[in-house]
Image (cartoon, rainbow over all chains, first blue to last red; front, side):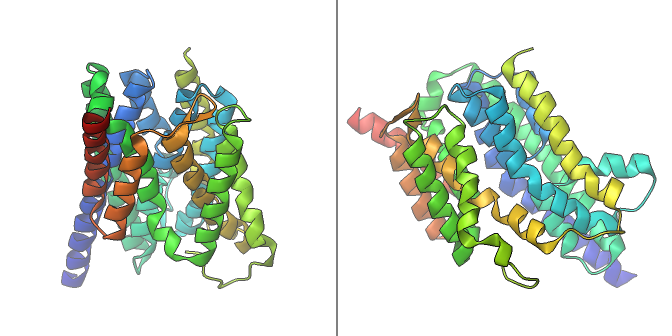
Length: 230
Length: 104
């Protein structure tokens, strides 16, 4: 029992540090909304209803560049396809009533799954998932609110303080660790080049969506069980 | 409803379906094919790399080189030096602001 308590304590600490680590991105997301003329309620709608960091940034960036609603949604959904894989791997540890499973599913994001799946028992996996998800949910929405409300009052601050540069910096931060893996590095470079080539010729959002085709270059149909893609 | 509001509702609904399919429908009865899993995990990388490019260079269908690039390079150096994310974001903003102050 004492062992279990210590594990729970360490899970809580991990969940709170992950929540704090994503907080600057929450501020950056709020700033992006302010910069794009998106109001407080819509910004909070993104952070609570969509609740998927990279997809929120992607959708709002596409809208900010005058992309269509369809392009914004497509880019967001492509980024969130991984939630399906997360959900299937967490499912055995999230048993309960239908209502309960429906509720906790909203927390199915990178951080909650990362903490959850690294635990040894179903009970601790569920504990890690819930703590990770709730910690990020609370801090992400709080920092989104601060970012959007402070900066929509003072839009000139966005360029004066260089806050517009935090958006690409946040994106770079999101993929940085993945770039240690050769396959991720390859698709990142191909995706970036694809986007750069398409910017002058296609409507906003299309360069991003087209970049998804980069994964064809690593020939995903040759993937075998146990290959390292993490 | 504004375009942003529409995106919140539709992207929110679609994302929720993806999140909930595992716990609600699949349970622990099935496994996803490993090819799907791998592709779903690989997919965000090129998309986010493309977003680095568009949010650095793009304004209205034109490739623009402005002070944002200074911030992105600073962020790259900060990440390479393994600084915490808080500093990465702050350094990016600071470098861009400083560049605007001095050059523009």
